[in-house]
Length: 198
Length: 187
Image 1 (tube, rainbow over the protein chains, first blue to last red):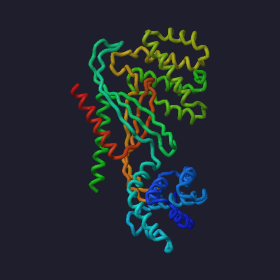
Image 2: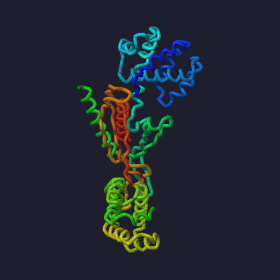
Image 3: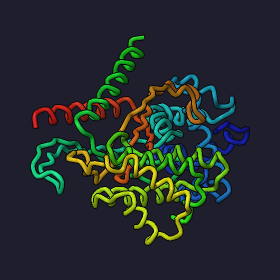
Image 4: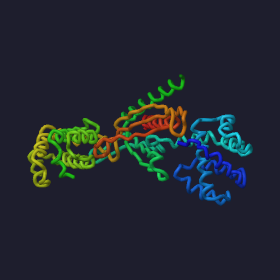
């Protein structure tokens, strides 16, 4: 969990060497989205663009990562709250630029954090079709409608890193079992309405 | 893996055979291998679920083939003896007993549900939760739905699959099922 450290703000001032505001913007986004383990390679990529040493690049990337994640963790949404994170003697223009960039991205970043938090496997896709069974080796003629359902379930993203494992669960439902499912889902919907109205 | 049958205590083996026969008779939706395996392990027997599943599959095939060929108890026991000669005595005893009591009743029945080539949906359990906080966001208040689907696979064995949905995903999920139901009505 990102906590702001003493040396972070000093490292952030390295951004004064950035070629443009857009470069700063881009770097902020990459530093937020990158997991801690990928910060090293990110620093190496950022190095040439900033004309700084490898060590300075690492400190900067780490500091930006901590700052952006800290803001999302605390749920800060107002400019004043973000501005007062910075120490007194921090470069004014850079402080304002960083605050502006953070405010622009905060809600997308919050969604990103929510989407990547630990969870049970997630439903990613659902396909279905309705068939009619007309005949089989034991029954010559029939007309039995049946549903075929395939759910694609992705294992916890945090565990799989960049190669999420998606498994397919295929099942058949008869009219009766489909009604059971609908009943259960209806109850969830009722609960949701009850909670939403509180 | 079938060698492992000798590891299973007689009463558990009898329970397994019972469940298999009841499943073949459409009295229960599936065979609760996972739960049975857990109880066998708790009693001190070292058997894993993969082996138990293979044994259940073999027995299921044995019983359903015997039913299709209308084998009497003696015929079944003779077949067992000539085939898998390593079956322990107590296992043969259980099979003989179970077949005697319930084997004839296995109607390889005129039932549309008998043609499972995919898993059969058995049950759904659900939970509506709100994530309050996480290492990335101190104040979340993020609602989500957790669902556990119980499915009997084509061999009859029951497994659970759990997953999460966001609220919009859940609404879509519900809508799709209502659509499936209405198509089923009209078809």
